[in-house]
Length: 199
Image 1 (cartoon, rainbow, N blue to C red):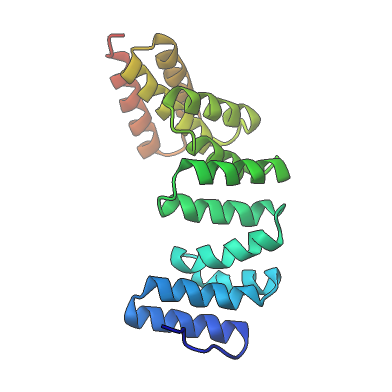
Image 2: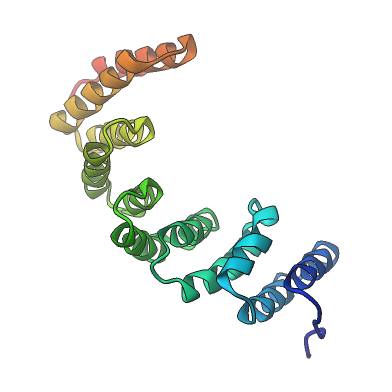
């Protein structure tokens, strides 16, 4: 079965493909049409037409696949694609490979480091990755929270007192920086729970 012919400027082709998908929910046809349109476009134009659809991963993925093909060292584009893959369940191998590429292209891209840590499937190794991210970006509270959460998971799963100490110290640091009563209560509750553990 042949695809519908496409013509006109890139934005019109993308909009037509999206309208057709919203009507028929044919994901395969949408991906074919998006890739056909992207193949003829510049990366700059693709970034521009992707922006209004940034919450729709089925649209972002084929567009950013072409952007990354054209710009293999563009860390921001690689992170956008890797994040879309992660959110659609593409798995740690492909996401980890893209995150490593983005991290190597731009060592200051925190999104790349976060995805690199998230993509590690083994909990002990994931703790070490989050420790490295938190060490590299000490003001990054999200990374430190992920470090604490993963260390607590490791402590519970493997009865590891060092992991428990790491989790508690990290949560205590976050508590010292908490700025809202809700944050403080949540962190205090978590610390009270961890103090009660017998490891």
